[in-house]
Image 1 (cartoon, rainbow, N blue to C red):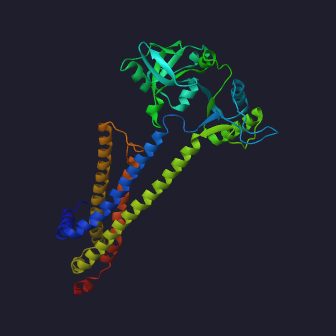
Image 2 (tube, rainbow, N blue to C red):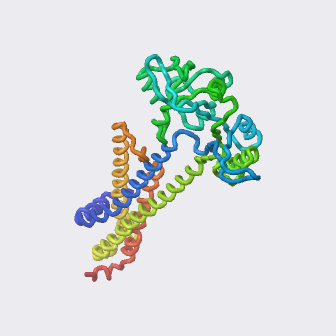
Image 3 (cartoon, one colour):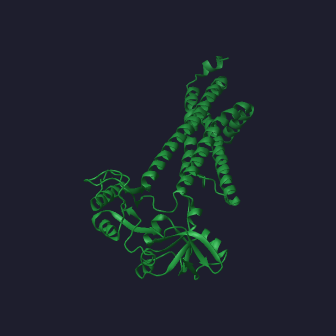
Length: 414
């Protein structure tokens, strides 16, 4: 039952000792404020780094051609390893657990893309549709390349948004024809890239892989292969299998890391995520440590309050107050201080994070390695619940001490 007199007494006690109450509350406020703010800032840093990986697959493996660095079976180092269409077929049939396998070639040099009187010198690649999916090219206008383009060797092209702005300005390029090395290609779409130097990677153009091989005299050449492991299979597994297979087919040592170049994005991704797991643990340790210090401060202050009110408590018990009423009075005061100050710290930290996010969005800027600072609602709810429980625990010892006071001894206290 709600006891108005008890709440009035608690408020009167807090007003009587304003400085002490403020300093006690500030310790709890600062603990939860720092915890939430550090968690939000850590999440913003994690989001920023995550965005740098782009929208592509986080478990992809890219395999490039290279030159041997080790002698093997009487063959001297320095041999150039070149991939062919047969290597693609062999990997597809002999290596298990590959979900997507897609090649990509480049038209050698920086070739000018012409449109009427406008032109721009951009890299032109030939790729299968699966490569665009795992590499992170996102459709912006029109569409990306599809299986029909690849199968029918269509003369179509997609260009990055940065390249589109240089060549076409603000006009929509979809449906227009551009000239690439004397051959006309129909623009079927534009794409955008997220993170990982995205704007620079939008200064590119893609045509179907089969079209590049037949049109630009690369009939049986594969410069790079990209692949993604099936769900539940690590990228390192297919990396090792592909290296061993290519070593057998091209006669080089599987220990020769220079014969073929392999970039495993999963390895780098897991390293970064492991770093953030350590950061999150550090933040929790610092935040909880600060919060505990504030709660211990509340407990100490409540012990002082009990000592100051010893005579008063003795009078209450002499007049018939039960131990429960004494305990509830001390506990309520402790919970009020911790819950109110802690929730205020929670709101303040959340408001700062929301304001920071709003400023970043309204300015249109993007801070390097930092994006969308936020706090998990579940964490905020848990923090509030912990505050209430901690407030009760902080006041429990002083409350039990108050309840154990004997009226005669209390009345004799100074």
